[in-house]
Image (cartoon, rainbow, N blue to C red; front, side, top):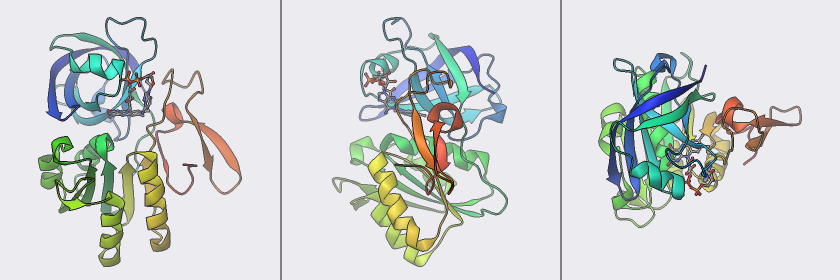
Length: 260
Ligand SMILES: Cc1cc2nc3c(=O)[nH]c(=O)nc-3n(C[C@H](O)[C@H](O)[C@H](O)COP(=O)(O)OP(=O)(O)OC[C@H]3O[C@@H](n4cnc5c(N)ncnc54)[C@H](O)[C@@H]3O)c2cc1C
């Protein structure tokens, strides 16, 4: 269950072009039951005029000291202010929010597919379920935008990297690299996070292989705790379209049920 807490910035540093990693002490939120895919909904400190909280996925947790790592990209005012927060700053956060990725004993081989800042939440999957066999497919804009590569190398049996400009790994889309790999090896499930065009391509590529997939939808949202319904998306379990609130009924959905 999520809580409104006063968290404390422990570290905040640049890890790639326009991308930062912030470690926060989570105050009264108990991080031990965190599920990968859940996020922290953070008020922009010192800027009451920026009414809406900014949702940022939790990319790793440390239950020993109740801290969480957040990896974020500067997009606009809110994330730009985040990038200048110094250690000891108090932040108002609601966390951990949402329904995350879900693995059972049946899924032994897992392919992780991430694009850009969507790569961040996938790292915590390997932390939560360390006994699975992982392959990671990571798509970056270019070498300067790459982050967490060593972490994925340590946690996954195979890491395939692509970049849009060819400055790192294979040139091209991460979904194309996945498509080539699927001809050789089929996982029990794919877990993914990234821009909607990437998720659409993922759906097309996976369909003929019959591989199930869960995706995290980083949809625009206002309240972040289920009250305003601005973040709804369509989901079809086969009985017609239903509308789900991404903040509390997601952000993770079945790729073949969610309307992209
Ligand atoms: C569940 C979830 C998890 C996310 N996880 C991450 C993450 O781990 N790392 C990361 O860098 N980004 C993540 N995002 C996107 C991040 O929330 C936005 O980039 C951020 O809110 C932009 O705020 P801003 O003030 O800098 O930009 P502005 O564009 O100035 O923001 C204006 C308003 O639009 C909203 N907004 C803008 N872009 C988005 C977006 N893509 N999604 C949702 N709301 C948006 C903001 O909340 C704000 O209210 C996530 C979004 C969601 C919904």
